[in-house]
Image (cartoon, rainbow, N blue to C red; front, side, top):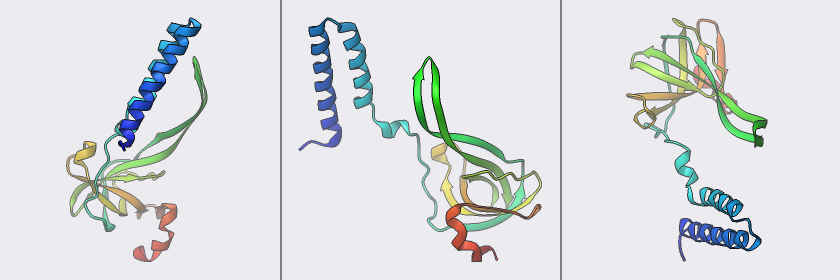
Length: 173
């Protein structure tokens, strides 16, 4: 029994041949070639390679550190799905999630913090960050970075926490 990718290639080639034969039979070879190219792209390009590089964890345990924010946080929307019809103009909606990125100077040096949500912190503010350390080389960062699950802005008293972190209230108190 072949692997899934081998079966996928065989099925893709069989579909392409069937589409070309049928389109030749009905006299629409040009449209058949276009449909065959579409099937070729769908079946033969691996989706996992399109997804990008994944960062690997340095430690599986979550750590807390405190530091001074070196610059205002950048908030951007990361697209993750699309529903609609792309015809000339796009009719539909792109769904995404917000992520905040900022740099903190701590006793470990300068650390890049990525928070999955809106986390507006200001330059020269004092923050406490609770999160997991990741290697940054795979994603283009020299050194490591922290994927924060909770950020406490001590300058303004605001607490930014992901939904699944409500049970870890005791750690910061």
